[in-house]
Length: 369
Ligand code: UD1
Ligand code: UDP
Image 1 (cartoon, helix red, strand yellow):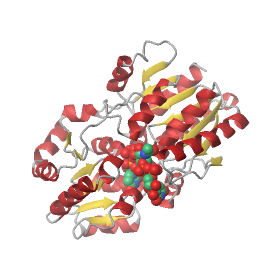
Image 2 (tube, protein in one colour; image 1 turned 120 degrees about the vertical axis):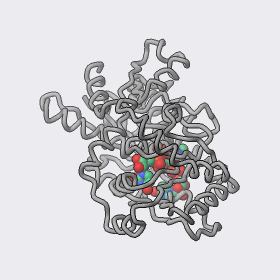
Image 3 (cartoon, protein in one colour; image 1 turned 135 degrees about the vertical axis):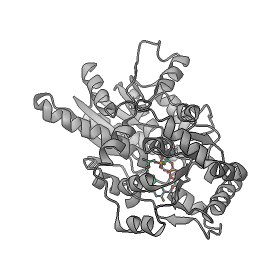
Image 4 (spheres, helix red, strand yellow; image 1 turned 30 degrees about the horizontal axis):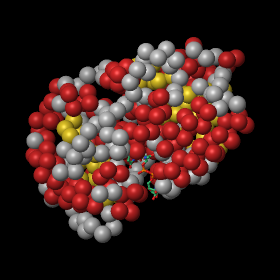
């Protein structure tokens, strides 16, 4: 079987790391039926600390194609990717195109494939925020409509597809395989070593700090929301330091805001991130991936959004939605002891699978090809 994997943005490298590992394990076991994986990097994320570091640390095979398409508006980015991915598909003639998550790279990959009648496999299918103003929601809904394999990370995701009629259509294979990000967290936490800079920052802070990330367009592109969020984190940092690895999007938009207390750092690699997660007191984030990782590391999560796709975490009481509301963010921090206790008591090992999701993806692709 020949598979084209489309990646481009940071969270996709982490998901693809888990699946590429499963592919190489499969190939070692069944050398005569080896899967040939061709990796296409769209170039959506391109700074070394947003891209190369993940390939190196997580031992993801180097991309066979690098399209170099980053920093464009939505239409220009998706359109250019569509054109270039089509060229690669026509040349490589894969059996399947594998896409991850909900970025512009995801939609471009799925669209290029379906137009050429190549089956599409979508890992992280069925997630919904029900907010079509989010570019990610548009990308997900459309990708799911044109996918043949819909690999859902949760039961909620399966139910969402059922509601949209996809489960019953009979043309697509929908299954809950669990979350490949859980596979990644379990595997890499055993080998992750932090850089010296992060190890000494954690020591300097006496292992008492919060970890935060802010990058969602809905937060960063609205100056009032961004300023409210940063203001709340500044206030919290006066008593418990907040470590904020800053996404380049936010960095560009934040230049006018004065920051005195938050510990701003450059984006970090996955190993540093895992180390920060394992040592922090809790997480403030608008990231999709980090909400779950907080849970994987038994940390309470205060989510800087009005909706989440990971509703089971909110239902379990481990995650609280506060939007970009300054007072709600500060109030949630005041209430963190309770959130911590609930997170500790309500942890379930099976919410996101059992750490073998990538193997399930590969098994199903092989079985149904
Ligand atoms: C994208 C995804 C988002 C995902 C996020 C993960 C879409 C619509 N959005 O958002 O779902 O959560 O990635 O991080 O696909 N930039 C750099 N260097 C880089 C990458 C980006 O400077 O290596 C800057 C550029 O100015 C760029 C901006 O960040 O224009 C935004 O990047 P883009 O890839 O368009 O969107 P993200 O906000 O990263
Ligand atoms: N991440 C990282 N370094 C950082 C910030 C995030 O390695 O400086 C990881 C994080 O642990 C998670 C993934 O990147 O695995 C999430 O990506 P991001 O928040 O950019 O995207 P989202 O999940 O919101 O789409």
